[in-house]
Length: 360
Image 1 (cartoon, one colour):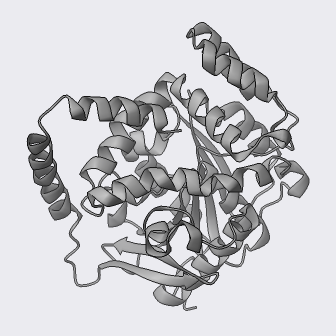
Image 2 (cartoon, one colour):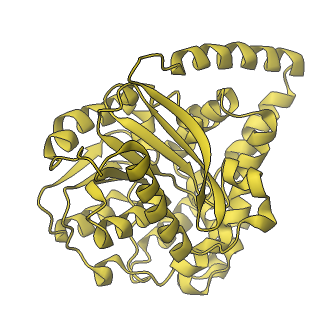
């Protein structure tokens, strides 16, 4: 997904003096580190490795008040760590304790054990890992249930945890919601073909046509190619990758230059998870959820379209449910407009919690 943006950004970097770039990066990172500092007596700022599914996983816990509700965020990709976005979501930590986790095959977890040490790289393993992470957070923070926030591909994982383990989840929040339908709807495939044709991308167009619309026949490499082609022809997503993702990655005080390389390597290491998702069907798995259910989608998202997310949402049965569109935004909508997402948390999600903070 990020390959095209990486090429553009790398070209710009090579055109400028390296020393100047690194000096500017150091200054901005220092300022961001100061803004991320949590000094309150009841605050928490922990980054550690936790043994999950037989592997050391990097987990971050940050918030200004341990008595606030806990949000466990599952990143997208697979392989797209959200730990780089700490500066973007800083204001959220005044109202919730935000837990971020680099899944197996991703970021700091990948760097810890290496590509050959990531163990079973399957969708089912990621779901089981997510349950273990939530159970760890409950014990560590003394909460009975957490707000489970799934982002893009991570929302497919979070959806399954919320459906099967409502005892762990106070509310579900899906952003850039990914919905599987067993391959019935091929509109995303044909829309990508149309965008590639209009953009004059003949080589990419030929590659996507050769893949065919049935994702159940795609290889991991073909999934990666399609994601990259589809994203590069989506103007809102392309803009967000440059202004939010790439900018956050370059200036993150939590990531070294070597970890920037690991960030991109994570997509390749995590790609084998994708073929196993082609036959998944969220409708067949069930549309009843015993927890408050929220979906936040960019109105212009061409990667995970709001139409498919809305179709599933309309069939969901839940104690409380709400669907929010962020106008003039595509993929990464809540990070493009973190202020709007915070307002959603404060006015809709938190008031719907059924007594989330109780002794475990």
